[in-house]
Image (cartoon, rainbow, N blue to C red; front, top):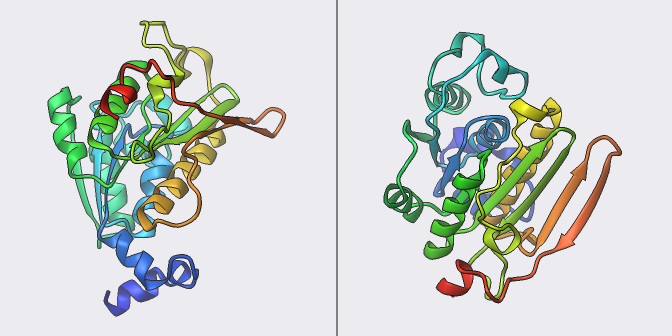
Length: 249
């Protein structure tokens, strides 16, 4: 670690739980962020600022005017650009000392497996069940921690699915893959700062996993009601008949 890095990350290094050793772990880490929208924006910005050394951004969507209410990594000048290209420019401007890789097409299962295989942590910032189920399947197979967040209207949730923990629940244990129609922000709306809250929590959980500090949200689902400003915590249990995590355990 050079002098500039010691100064840049000094406020984190001062934390006894992180110190220089933890900061070096961050610099040596690789994280995949899938979805560069409302959740992916704060996740990517905070991980880049914190010094995660290699970020892979995955999204095939373009920036639209309606995105700017909540997707704070993009600006007006980025409308009609690919989100990953816009996000990569913002991250490089924020921290030129990290590597940013982009994937501009929706990956096949095999391509996603290759991407995840090189990662220490995957952050799910998608907004559809199909992507979430696929990410869950691949991360479970490769034993890679998955930091999951979701938000709609004034409600949100966040958790960690960690297949390295024996008996830990996965996304498929909680949600049935039955082709249900999912509500989206474009149909139901969402409060802008809510995505910042959950995305920031995803970034915190990612940093904890990378530096091996604290207790992760694995096995616990945090549910936030912004209207009432209340949190609830649910304990997650592995489904003994889960076709994903029980199959690979």
